[in-house]
Length: 278
Image 1 (cartoon, rainbow, N blue to C red):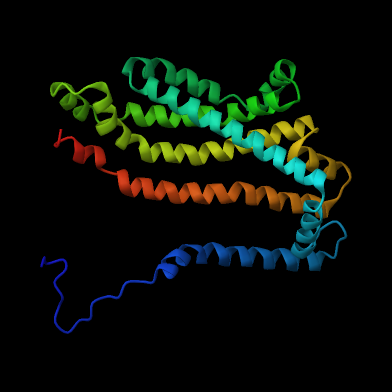
Image 2 (image 1 turned 45 degrees about the vertical axis):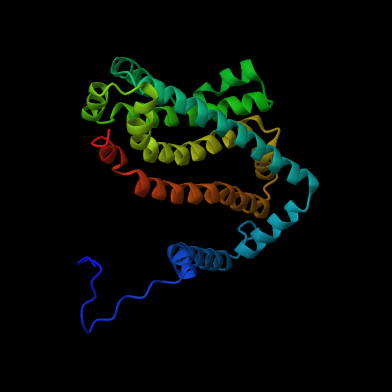
């Protein structure tokens, strides 16, 4: 028995927490914050006593009514499908380009400043180009959403790949490891936590780009529905749709954040541990 596991006389061993408690504990603080926000919102709506400022229950009721419409459900499904396609393209292309560029010190130094310069351009100023060349349909929306997500994903993976410990790479070269062995044992364990962070950030930015494209186009998806509600000054529907958009954005983000924590805990130090075992 090791000293870490040896029981101290007279001191009871700590009992493991139930699995359900471990699962629910991280959600307690966010739920309390949500309840506090809803209470403040309700009190403010009642105090203002305005016909254009709904209470949480009124906003939820309008959202439920909207979701009962087949046209509204079709708009939600259309946005989700375009979001899924745009996000998948941004993740795959951004990861591959970032990984390939990051493997070369020369190309990392040459291309990184150019990519950061492009990323600093406000994307909204590029929308007319997408409108002219790609139109208002799914292709234009996918392209604009893709642009918002691919560059952050590329830069994060590029930075993680370029910052892999060069000592480990030199050790691998001296041991004549093949390229697949080098990638599997050194590079991938080093970049996985950053790549998962890129997944989380790219999702939110891709969704943002898609909503902007739908709002400016005003013809399809949740953005089109939101624009019509704004034009008709239907505040209950507007707030209800904002709630729906928040849920769509929040659920994958929370799941990706949990995946990020697990990846960091699992892969932190993996490359360092693997180097002596080469």
